[in-house]
Image (cartoon, rainbow, N blue to C red; front, side, top):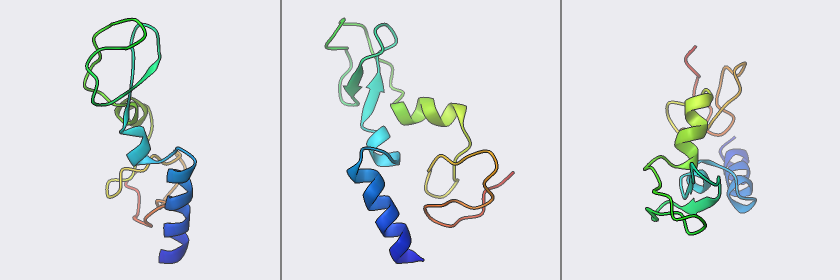
Length: 88
């Protein structure tokens, strides 16, 4: 199971998904472009960026694992990444 989870996690990171990758970006509220999380202004339109990352925005709309922060579907009982039971 641990090897399977590691392979799944590595695949998610490689293809640009997963918690760590989503925490690396912010979304501009004006032009919706992606900026790295260390920027405070949008390079495209110069708008001020909030401190919320792409993950913060996504997690506010979806259920997520309390242990590893992976976003899970509403019907999942266990996290597919770490196996933790999801609280209802």
